[in-house]
Image 1 (cartoon, rainbow, N blue to C red):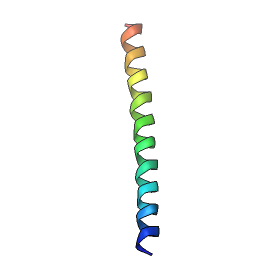
Image 2: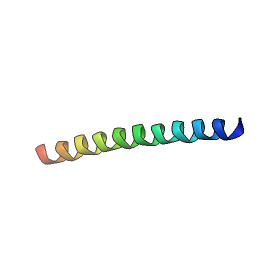
Image 3: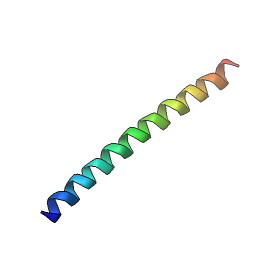
Image 4: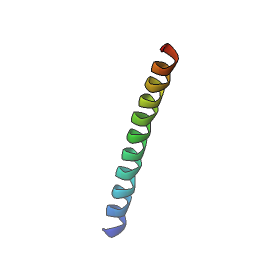
Length: 38
């Protein structure tokens, strides 16, 4: 029981990390493009 819950938590944390990373990446690219356009 505990191991299954831990696995679910790990998967959730992994998804959140990937989501945040992609968000930050897209924001960085947008900022860099904005700097280039100026």
